Length: 221
Image (tube, rainbow, N blue to C red; front, side, top):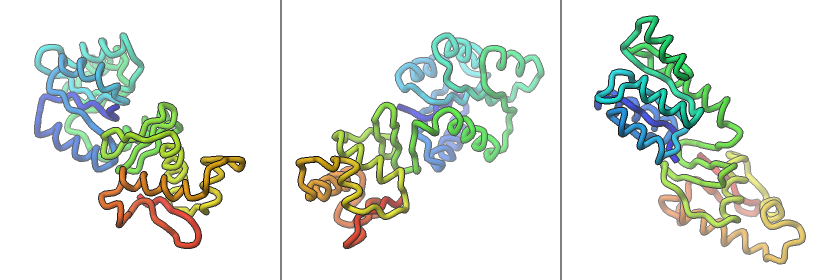
């Protein structure tokens, strides 16, 4: 799954925008024309589309229309076409916002953050390194899916939801395995080890899942 699909025929502008978005923790996909954008949208299940209007072949208005026929995914049009009729056309076709080029990157990022907060915050936990989709029970590292067992997912979710807090071992064990579980407490240690192997650059020197000796574990961004 991709957070943001960037549809822009200017490669330099698209690359710069994607770099800013990635720095904010979003996964991105870039398409330089309308036809490839529609194909990518079908495959990536993008959560938001940033859409230029003046594209080779199918223009942005056509892309917006096609997307709206199938999905209510948020669309922000970013275009040098600044006439009132163009803006009205984009909004009538279903765009959520219409921003003129050249734009202030901070304003665009704020609008994107607002959309993600209103639409997805309850479903998504992200810190720019890891992302968890709670509803779909999927986890991603740097935009790539992680293969996690059910317990690994539940444990990682609990740690990330309490980022920066040290959680007691007994609390973690009881939350994930239950008070009446037949599993041994050592199971928690084993699952922490497995999680570190999957998310840490060096599992022997973890910087995200931290051991607090004699107490428990803490997740750090």
